[in-house]
Length: 335
Image (cartoon, rainbow, N blue to C red; front, top):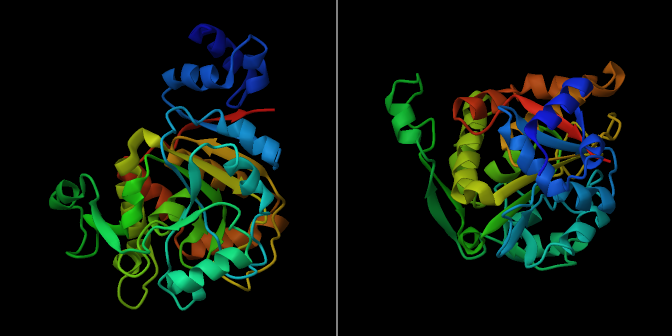
């Protein structure tokens, strides 16, 4: 393995970003590069402009160390015929190359054919996600998992009202059958969360449809910081359950202001950006937002308005407060 000093000199030459082609030129494999860069106080977020199966397969090699056993691929299968869903081939080609993997989902709380397992499966077929087994994890009920550290956190007088926050959350019972999780996320806006990234994909998406999601949304479906903080707490419970056996991919394509849970989502105005991958949930969502904010105003105005009008950046702030990752990251370009 090449020395850290060699990587430091390449980083100094390249500024805040790091082009992996420089590291490959000195003979390092993707796995060695990912391991070598762990010395930095920053987290690593790998990036490619290549939004294709080839790009996905390549970027996955930088984060998949330790992802083995029975692997669940958590994605948002969307409402029937959702207008902005990612192309099926972008997950079909990746899943086929991940041994012992299948898609995992949970039912939803809002009125939808995805509310019940039987009709949810019809939607999965309609949208083309039945190319591999799909485990609706709350099909046989749910289990409670703790939010590590929350009891102590709340006891220290953080200014939260009793009952506003979660010390445990209900997840689909089948989640316990998995050794590893790949969180495959279509990054976009969201009507309640401001934006939907890796955090939302697990924080809401792996909470059981009727119990877990109700714990997060609360009675009357209030919006704002409390909802977002509960979503983060749920995500923390899931991320810490899997520890170093959960990794994240965000695809920045077809980025509407609306989520795939909206069957009539607005057409995207943002240009397609690329694919990001990381082992750090906070860093990948922060990097995704930073890339969106750098787009020309005529492209990102609507989605930024959606994010900020829903206090969406609270997701990042609260993940940081709960120690879920790093807001400082190396954005590492791969070919």
